[in-house]
Length: 374
Image (cartoon, rainbow, N blue to C red):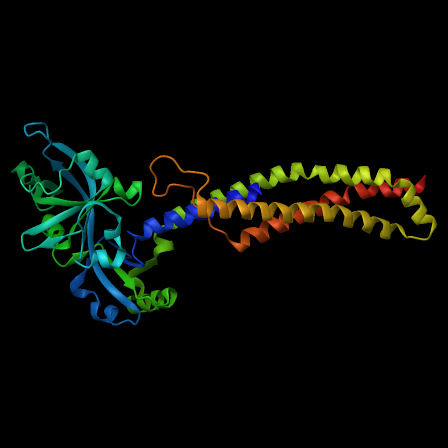
């Protein structure tokens, strides 16, 4: 019961974290194989946009930048913070769904009055952002590669101002580091015209991810790398899977210790039935038959334990899923621990219990030979 419950919690956490990352991570991401930037003028945009199944095409320009914001009340020392500046196309919210993760303000990147910034909740907290305060914009500093610091140190940075209009909350790592701005603003700040650090693609509802990814890669050739969501967050998924199966092995070892109950009960049964064993032997029963009887008895105990444990575990999982009996503290995205049921987990646990039970049943039946020799 404990084993299937723990693994279901890991499944639920994996699905939850994956869904949170999906609000920020594109379905497909194109990056240059060599260098940092993609030259949009030489990029086959029309061929990529013409691939069947693609619904969204977004150019992205991102880099680290220094944010400076006047603290409140006025006259206080300005607050500074280094964050990842992500310049995106106007349709970015439609492709990722980041607008559904807004906790304050609105997801507006540009209107007739100018450019606007959307900040992660961690960035906003560190700068003590006041939304809709257009008299106090965020000043963003980015190194000017073309400046001569020896001649004029003031030209070492390009500086642009932008007003904060919204705050999102997705996942702590993203919330503490990312500020989203229009790509036009980012290109002006970085002095990078017609370039992007990546191209992010969104698929239609009926599109096949693997097929579309292969088609995009075929069009681009070997000069670009195309990654899906799993590949973009490969390390995160590997860590979560390793944690899950590490827990499986640890609890499996505990199960191995607990299975000695089967060894003990089978041994006691053999000792209690020694007269019956001898009687069967006198009646012509072969030693192999008697062994199989007690092996079957031990396997029945393991089988009953496996089935009853899985049923109780399934009941506990369903209670947690629909009623949230075990809450999650810390102001996380959900109120209770998430759970998810996977058939492979049930089969793995069932197989493990039967395997250990089979080994535990083999050991005590060796005493049958000694009883028959007496």
